Image (cartoon, rainbow, N blue to C red; front, side, top):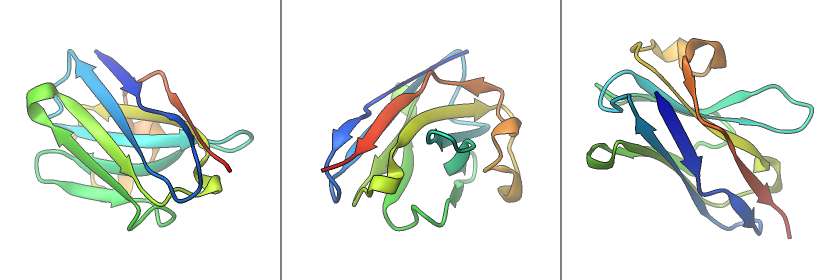
Length: 126
């Protein structure tokens, strides 16, 4: 299983970015997928996670209304659309996946995911 994350970069506050995570050896049509981030000196946190079979989705309070997770099954790719970015969104972003259909309360915990992408840096700064 490989997850290849891309799409990070430098953006001004208020701007947008779209992260992509292409999966191989793992079908994103089932299980649970997620985006996590880790800022310097902080623990890795769940940003947005989705149980793909029924669409149950978690968003961290800090990103609700600004970020959207969605997938394109034909490309076996999951995306994170990030709008109205803030400096506090600056972090390395990781995509993750597990074959388990996690319950909602478990989605945001990194320890529940078996497969991880390599991370992509997002920097929000003027």
